[in-house]
Length: 234
Length: 288
Image (cartoon, rainbow over all chains, first blue to last red; front, side):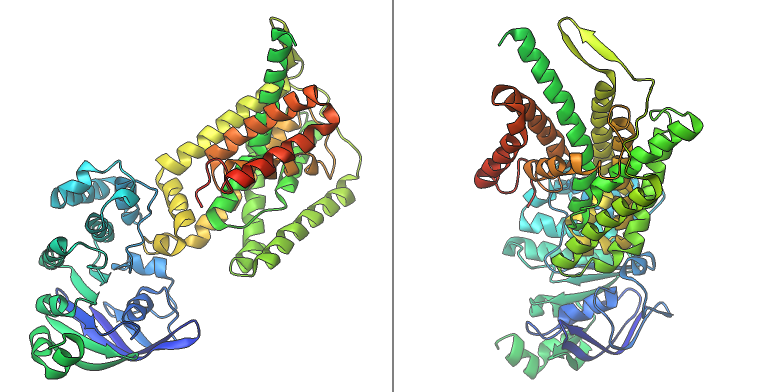
């Protein structure tokens, strides 16, 4: 599905990722973990096309993405739910969802996906005419994930989905990520909540100062001494 | 002041105010979508007026009838200006952006002088000419038509931005360009669309104003200063804000001009602007 090789990218002219390679097969949940400022978000943003690729290659379903504008990558089935959610706060819940389906020209598709969102998260249906900015943190995250699903992507990239979400709801968010995978959508996940992320991930990568320093199954990484000491405080 | 006189002043103010709003909505749309102040907006209005004039002078077509063509022409001018100039300065420092649109203003005026001479031109007769008398108050039919046009343009823009898919995408781009990109929305196309629609609004304004106002290369300056006041007062980027602010400015201008003296009317309007900026810097319906 996704094949990233030796990519480099800068943030404000400072190299943010120096050498990142990762792969993701169809239906997998892959987590990228690491401390703040090590290039997790930049990796997702570079794959999405928001940051300029300075070196290396990115292939999605066998197609090279270099030089392709970010908005065209969405049509290839690649969607990023960005850090901080970036909802359109003054638009309604429903308008946000429909914008997620902007590339879907078929009104039946849009209606189906709206209904899917409202049955999965009834609270979004109850608040469909409310401004997105008035929702709670957890509700906003659910809206952001649903908005990302509206175009029926093949690969959903989630940047810190548990950020700003009440602890009670964090479990719900991770359950939802697993449910999305059940629908056949691959997930590339970046998380501060390393324990939770590696628990649900098939495989994980540890990133440090812009390089992948370790990789393995979620279970292996959770049991790894270095990961436990450095990131889980055990 | 008798009730009739009061009513007459109020109606005149309302009509002028709606014409200001008509010029201001396109300006505020462009700013709202991409945070660039278009100093050449008055020249878009001027081009709209000339298009109407030439349609009338060469082909005998009334400005009201040629309005769709004028709007389409100006839409093209707006998109062209975006593609040729604005696209290159989106991420440039603000001063470069100001100079670019300011330079454009001078260029358009110069071209109009060169090709069409500085003479004042008039559309000498129009379908909507003459006066309307309602009881004891009287006003021009062209002004009334322009005012109705202003209501129509504002309502149309509002509907487009809030009730259509493309309009919502434009609104989303205005709120957060990068997030809109992640929805698969092409930011460049949305910006071009905003310039096209903004200029088309000025084109419609030009067609309506051409029915009662002389047409000359600098005509834009007669409206644009007040249009800026209206945009700031209504809140940068707010279409509905510009609409109400236009009415407020028009009424205050006419009432103030009557009470204090017509030579002070602009001063009164600008004082109002200062007052509003002191109390509410983001304008009446600003989003910032």
